[in-house]
Image (cartoon, rainbow, N blue to C red; front, side, top):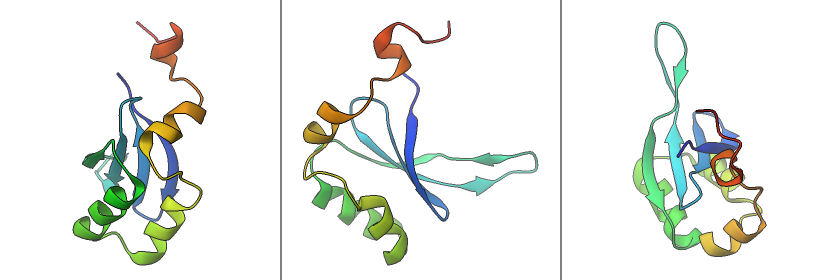
Length: 92
């Protein structure tokens, strides 16, 4: 399933594949930026914040990325728009 970024701050982003939050870090290649996932969290915002600290996300970026997130991934997943793959609109 494709992931969908929903928050970006500096070189860091949050995405989801519908099952978990995905912490991504931007790297520049010769042709374009790439956003590999560096941490996966499907439990709580506190665990996500700890993962951000462990990965070296600057405090200001972490605060921006975490702003507005509910306490758990399950709560967030109830309110997010569905991914294309979940609606049957995904490209084949």
